[in-house]
Image 1 (tube, rainbow, N blue to C red):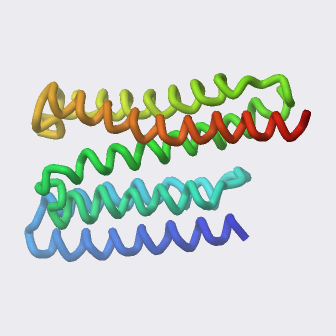
Image 2: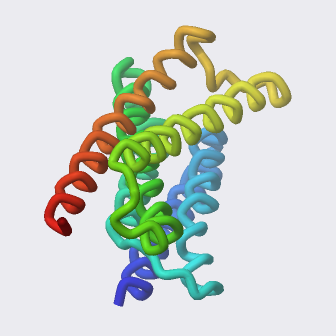
Length: 192
């Protein structure tokens, strides 16, 4: 069932962005059309993975990812909410939280089964926080590279923008990492 829902939700987003791309390019609004093309590509990632791999998806993470795409691509870039000032920071907090949840899902699939009750809540906390922070760093590298090589202005505020984004990513990851560490500690106490 999760696989079908991932396909349906991703397909809805891809079709929505494709319609926007056609609309904006036909009206010579190139920037918004290009953002919509990016939306097609980003929305197609879970769709293609669901169609061509046997990966089991964590539906809340996929839905969160698609909601994040709506917030960043449609509301932020196309409707101009990034001009509000606080929207970019808010989206980085959200992305840090989503990355942290993704780190938890990865941890539970790769580590937890073999570690059993020997895993430390501090390890879960640090792994989750590190996963979220690394995602934020990689995104800022992407922004910096795009600005340098393609003459874009993704880092409009320069160093201040980068540091604010990294701090926001870390805060989002920190909240979820604290929750994951506490949850692990409670589970370990119940098993004793």
